[in-house]
Length: 206
Image 1 (cartoon, rainbow, N blue to C red):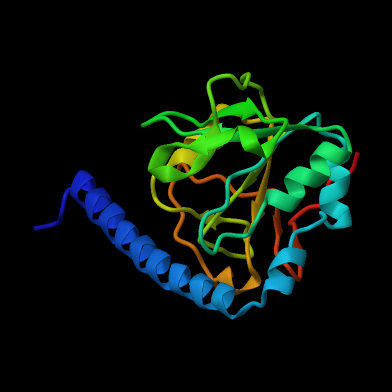
Image 2 (image 1 turned 180 degrees about the horizontal axis):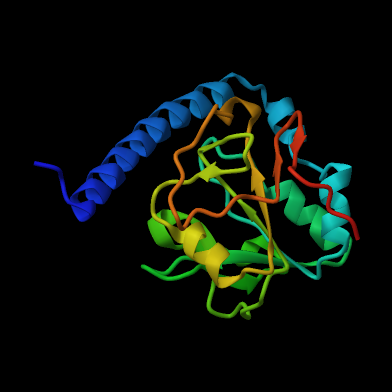
């Protein structure tokens, strides 16, 4: 008996989910090992200033959204300092269940407080803003500009909610994989920045 279309689709999605889970476990481990081997000086210098291609995109943006790095994620604290120095509005996300991230303006990192899963996020006194450029964390990426996140779908919903915002991924080079399984809702990034390389599929001119 030939399986129904709905059954085949369910099996496909189940297989896809299993592949993503395996990739998450493997690349979380790789990232942790890589980060653990870096000395403090190297950690402090990494992602301190944006490379020229990203700096040009930031120039064209009024509001840039960052994320609060946890554990071995690529750090963003130095980028926040840089954005403040050049007069950009800096935003950080607030996570709400089954909804796009809400971005709030943060003029001082001291305004961040423990939120969802103890990740630092802006307090209620910080005003909501709309980002022109979103810098997102990830567990893995490939050369087709696909990202693999934690699996909660927060950035998938967010990219859908802000279709005009540039999508930039920040990661360590060790997080690159050959191929990430893609679902209908997955949106490719416009640029990926690692400590050693800038990856983009098309030239973005002003």
